[in-house]
Length: 316
Image (cartoon, rainbow, N blue to C red; front, top):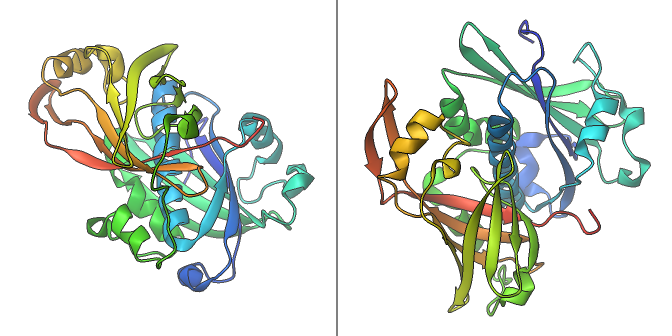
């Protein structure tokens, strides 16, 4: 464990511990994981950056869920639970503080700790025993910047589980390899996706209305208007308002966001709905921005990446 600057950020998720992480793919039964989001004790990152990191980590855990037959839960009382299990030593957690309702589903706990020392970001993803609270496994990485950490987080998350990260394979291809069992709804409707979703990187909670309109949270009480339509079994979500700096300030400062507004194409998503109705899996079509010394030097408007939206737990 590295020495820490005051007030690290602790990304906490309750996960099932299994004997050999590297052989997780051999398991036949789905394991349950409870993701608890991000705790920022001293504001090392801005609230917007914390949300970006939380969404990014959640999306990669969902990819692992899909590829390895795991199941994730996303409770909204994560803050209270986090406060109860973190200990001063960071070498163990208080397993007695975990709600009994999770027994025996959750057998382990992952805590990701972020520190910034001399301008370098350090991320430790750690797995603790659910029964004893002891540290079982950790994956340590360092990043030159916050943006580099967001970009490279997938590899760190996959390595924690001993999984080879093969992004060229693609999430959809990986899902297709699971067998002949249908994974997605063939004829989804707006009514089936109505309600709240946990969005992908750059957005927070998304609320889909019965009439196909939707609203995505952007942090700091900002929102983005969306429109949803379904064509040929594909759920298409598009930005339904002009570009504005608020849409990019979860990743960039205002001075850069104002430049992107003039150059970037509107955001859009194409999803399929999982058979259990808990996940929207597909791609986000957006812009890849190159910045040099505070100036946007290039915007690639052909860029797209994998995206996953997840349902919060019922009753939250």
